[in-house]
Length: 269
Image 1 (cartoon, one colour):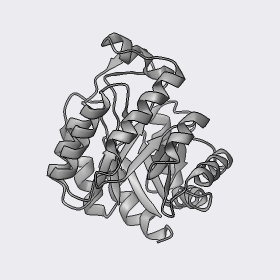
Image 2 (spheres, helix red, strand yellow):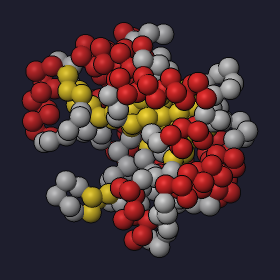
Image 3 (cartoon, one colour):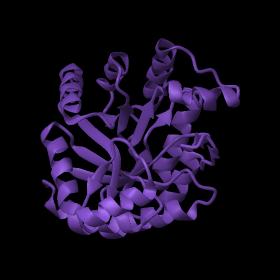
């Protein structure tokens, strides 16, 4: 099982994300993954800035030497398929054999972003058709292409890619969906991955205190290394080849160090 970490895209400055990527590589993690948004809204409704996802990954590629990296996910509705494929190809040239290109159709939460910048949101069917074209444009270029998403129509596209990612489902639901995608897949090698929110610290008590300070984050796993290991092992047993931790305090490089030193050694190799 491989262990990844999400980057803090929702900032004005790139240095926090680069610091986390460097810490993740130093700690021996397998990959770092950035979001692909034009902006986000906080819990209070205020706009939050967002660093452009693929540009930030270019900086990550230049700042690191070993660790895998990629978008989670690059939304097919933000760029024409050929433009997206060209950007991904450039990242792969900057850092050969390290890019994992996860593509997605977007969802209703993306509607405001798209419409603010004059980009169509479209129906689910239209978004999946655009995703299908983006996967066609990116496949076969020397790097793995995963598809992120939950709907049955997205799963059909994911089944012909190199892998699939699912953000945040319960263990039982992930196991069911991973089995369904694998049954549709026709090649021998296929990667299933799970990602979710975490609040982690040196032990359970410290993690609970951090969670209270950070505020309400429904669905986040809260705990010390042993608790995190138990959760990640469970998803591995349910079919995840990669598990990707999304820390609520995503700008803190200490999360990467803790995961690399105290969690990764206890995961199945």
